[in-house]
Image 1 (cartoon, each protein chain N blue to C red):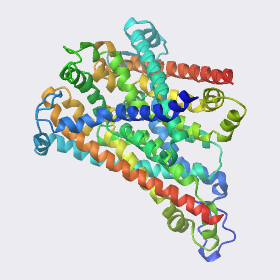
Image 2 (cartoon, rainbow over the protein chains, first blue to last red; image 1 turned 180 degrees about the horizontal axis):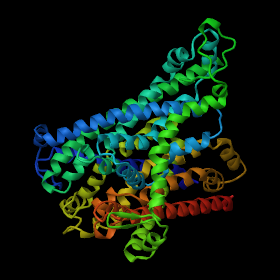
Image 3 (tube, rainbow over the protein chains, first blue to last red; image 1 turned 30 degrees about the vertical axis):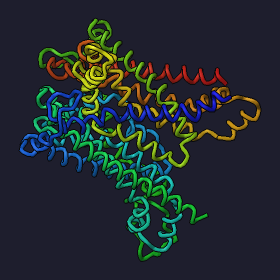
Image 4 (cartoon, each protein chain N blue to C red; image 1 turned 120 degrees about the vertical axis):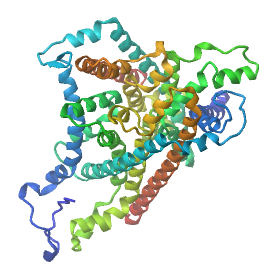
Length: 273
Length: 306
């Protein structure tokens, strides 16, 4: 019994810590080596420098790629969240035939190897005769982001109390007015959280952008091109550290919003009991 | 927003324009609301996948597509040693990766669910953060860690543990497996955690009261009841890893190449779409069969334990 007690209270927290270490170690190496005064990524460190960051500023190609990523990210997050709002609302609110099939189709990218989604989209785009461009990247990434937006939004919409809407309609508000003035304020944090999550995914998404971007690279595609040259690695690490910091900020914001929705829904429910 | 709610009781002067009868009611409202998204997914996912499927039965002469039905591409995909070996290796790596990921992640999910207390959400968040950050750069980091002049070798040498670098860390299927386990860890923890959260704690207490020890009550109550989570974790890891492109390219070397590289080559340099399509469909088919088999086995195992 003592062994089991020991295992429950000592071994597991230690394991948990090691596990978190395993998860974070490779990620923490990026900023560490981005400030290292040598091109080789090895210990011991050679000294502190910010020259790799400074070198990013004059880099036209990188700045163009960053701008492309920004445009793609904004378009993808808006489109994917907009489409997911409709679908999540339909799924959480109404029972109808074909609901499971439609939901399954929208969530399918989670259960398909990404290369197959990328290849099939590439085929269709070329088949139709369209040019590969940022537009095709956006269209493809929306397919890929929809399941994540849906997951965030269905969770946000699920606990919504329908009687609030019914009351508003009974009191003479229009359907749209009810959505804007009753539904939207409650689900707004979930919507913002979906925007942030899909923006983060788009910012880091590589494979679809690699297949569909033609001559306009996004940041990950640019990075992929740089990885062939060992001498360019420190610049990539500096760029990667900036992207890492940005991703973490966006995720923390998304998480805080998600919690706010959860709290709002639970206090809302409590008020009705 | 088509919120088709019955508004007969509301103020008449504020009524919306009358809708055609087929648009009234719950059924129609739901369909109308989901259709933009469903159509988007149909045109940009459903139809493209069906096109790949169609192409896999056609052949190509230079730039001409011959649309007569044939199984030739599948014969090549399944019997030519180069493709057969790539398929088998991809499946083996993804099977190993999903089993290892689930095994190392289960205790973490269990710890958070049963002993996380009020820190549950924080712990879950901490675990998901690395999985949302740049995939490309995470793989790159593993290359820096495992390389000949990498962090692990130079670190161990400066500590005096080894005298010369170990060459066999990078550019093989082990490196691919380690990197993939790292990439997919959180995706395995979440479904297991969700299924553990659903378990009625009084069942565990009852087992204890009736004389089961920790291990027995875990094996007979917690593990079987969490099996749905284990199964979805297996699938969530296995399915995408089979077709992973970046990891084999960056850390796999010659011995770690997987099927995605071959698929990409058929759509790029080799320009043989039908063969590329057949390789894609074969990958999807085999992974579905394997996933189904794993799910079934785990379900049976859960029943046996009970």
